[in-house]
Amino acid sequence: MCGIAGYIGPREAIAIVFDQITRLEYRGYDSAGVAFQREGGIGILKKAGKLVNLKQLLETEKPVSHLAIAHSRWATHGGPTDENAHPHFDQHDRIAVIHNGIIENYFELAQELSAEGHVFVSETDTEIAAHVIGREYEKSGCLTAAVREAAKRLKGAYAMVVLSVDDPNRIVAVRNASPLVLGLGEGENFLASDIPALLPYTRKVIVMDEGDLATLSREGITLEDGNGEEKTPEVMTIDWDIEAAEKGGFPHFMIKEIHEQPESVRACLAGRLQHDGSVKLLNTLPDDVWRRTERVTMVACGTAYHAGLMGAYLIESMLRIPVEVEYASEFRYNNPILRETDLAIVISQSGETADTLAALKLAKSRGVATLGIVNVVGSSIARECDAVHYLQAGPEISVASTKAYSGQVVTLALAALYAAQVRGVSTDLAASLALLPTRMAETLCVEEQCLSIAKLIRDTQLMFYLGRGADAAAALEGALKMKEIAYVATQESPAGEMKHGPLALVEPGVVAVFGSTDPVTRDKVVSNIKEVKARRGTVIGIGLDHPMMRNVCDEFIPIPDTGSHVVNAALSVLPMQLLAYHLAHLRGCEIDQPRNLAKSVTVE
Ligand code: F6R
Image (tube, rainbow, N blue to C red; front, side, top):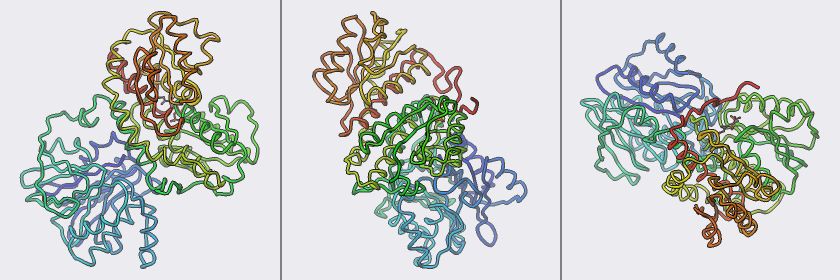
């Protein structure tokens, strides 16, 4: 996701903040920029693309300053262009702002500001925030007060850093949910969105709390809480090394990304799922397309395909529209039957998967409406689709996909809800989705249990992943995680299929993971579990807590109920991710870059 850096002090500030955002490069970004105090005002230099582009611009312009802020942007509102790159000015070019996160009410604020004559030069929510701060600054003439007042108007998760032309010795920073850390030096001070950017300069850091507002000068840092009350900062001394810090203290990106899911799903829902259960979607297809759609075809590969299966359950059960989920590599060569009233949904984390892109082009060539469910903004698939819904999951670095999977399921669920709204179908899915971030955080508490189960099954050679309905789709994803990072052979299928062949493989030492998140099929699943137990296989159950499941399974991992079988099934994938991760770790596997696999498959 985006990176933030800031410095005030006697040293050359631009070189320092540039170095700081270079240290955040691993987070992913697609444009970057700096703002700095100079004779006669604030200078801004920014460039789309990699940091090397900004570096060239800095080498040409050679700015010098004692105070600078820098930002690397991962596009959300508006594509990765020079104009959309941060920093952004206010209406009078007197306030400069960089920002991580999303201003959920930016549209409403933009309308309000436009009515007052404000003109915007970018498509970003950040520029709107800069104008809101600028408007407050006109009233009070105090930068800290202007940021404090403006923050009251901003809804969403954000970390924001602000400079004023009139106050060349001050940086003001505010955070709400998105992280921001301050670094203390001698006669100099720093800030960053993440600790690794501070570590070469200082190990004394203050982690800002939710709602905190900080004012930095050379001499020191003052901190106030969300109510404007001054507070004494808690200074921590960091003793991690830089590599560990990039992973936020986690040993691997995969486990960091597993734990990011409550937040990434929250970001995905933010501004889209309203309190009354209705859905607002930017950049979606015209309502007319949602209304006339008679059949949906989803195309994707790997984990994205598994997310598509979950989406299919949701759309078919809610809208009663037939859905086909196709492997992109098959679809493109199968001369698919497509009609004008079809909708093609193309799912891809990277937005660059060659087969998925080819499938999309084929669907377009047949005149079918296309919708992308994509994580990487401005990627090829995002650009080619008629409309795109972004996952808002932030960059996924581990090759094994985790937070993109949950983001894809939730983005598909939002699309299904939107279609239901347009078509006048009533559903209670919204309530389950609203609960999901909290339920995910609760579910992740089973990590210790997953670790002890991983120890018990450490030497297993074969695992079954089984379930019914949406649990069968979850089983496919759980099995994929296990084979790709722990290199355990797996056999996955709907639980009822087992006795038609695969059961022959069950013997002592074989482990079967059964999902059971639907009370309606629980009895049937229990019968299938008994078939495995009768052949002395080991059974791990994952699902809604029930005495029958606890009784029949060797190990049982409970997940909380969201009220929707499909959402529950997607939730049950989290313990499967944790199980695969811990087994891989115990077996000494290369977790973030498993053998033979690549993050973005841009070849057929
Ligand atoms: C598995 C995994 C892959 C991808 C697949 C599609 O953990 O990451 O199976 O899901 O290669 O990639 P995207 O979503 O980028 O099109």
